[in-house]
Length: 525
Image (tube, rainbow, N blue to C red; front, side, top):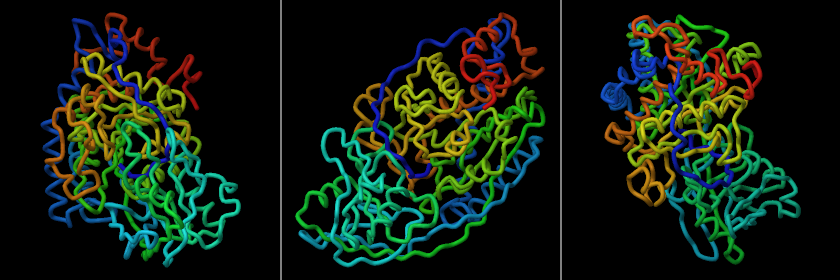
């Protein structure tokens, strides 16, 4: 999962939904016939997924310790998946693309006055991806429309007017919140700032770290001055100090990354109603990325393989996608959606996204498609995707918690294009609360994944129990939204034998070809 975030304040509401309705998805056949979803869940196991993860680890160990986009580790992992898919009968496609990446050659950040402090790279600050470079010696720090009180909600730096009277040549101190980092940086540069320091917001948002160092991105090249992310504590210190000055040195090199997405489409199913099931395959350069995002990649691989083995017949074409360049700013999924065109967007029924589904201190997070908890509602149909996941877990007696559509993973390009999306997540660098620990187990006050974006994100950094629970939910969603049937599974047609399919359809606004009724007319966007 990329460290990019656009901050919006929200309060977590925990608890499970009402019990699932009879027949939790297409193919429910009562006592006489086991549903397609249940058959697929039985076929996909945490044990088989962990076998794939061990192979991912083996590849990373032999290729510089990572599987980052554009590296041999990434290519070998893709080749391994590709071989299995072809053996299972899928036609695969490599979708090549390139992008510019900024590598950090030198990064220094220190407070000169009133109290000299040398800050430590990664532990106390980190340059934004696509930052400009430069050197500023003993630059005066000027806070820009920050808020250190109450919920610390802030629009700091989001408007050009925030910089009215800003002293040219000063270093802009801006606070995370409301708009993306690129907007804040561009406004600061236009006002004459010599550099930008973005500090974390300093409020509690379950599933997200709003206190620690920001590892963010500007999205693309274009900002010509240094832009750093730091913690709320350091930002607050600079904001409240008397006449603070800091020094910043940032030297970078721009390189071109040549990589590809790996795609596999089901031979059966309506190509005008595609269900895109995605997970990013690349890791960060710092480690093998087994939880982030080997877990999502291996899970959708196992679902695809078991669908083929069980002779699945989806009514809607399934597109399994392993994205590249996610860790460098959602590059692969952005490219895929950019190539769809108007017709391709119309032919994409929805996107399911699975990024980090085996965190060692987990919460069963479901993307907040209806916006009821975080205010950002996804495109029409996203609410139904959320409900399908929540009802699935509730039917197994498992609690869930919502997590916001904050643009941190590969669903972002789909929802920006108006395509319904949803998915699962078990937590990254955010800190588990006491309430979450009481409900989901684990350790309060510790990150959901203490090895997030580190070398220790190995095969030992995965919780097998939650991985199995998430895999069941993935299998259920693919069977449901793919409207999957199989002559070999004791289920005939799309209407079951007890009327449950008709009831599920009525409650969820899904007819096997898209969402309809009160949630989107004829299912088209």
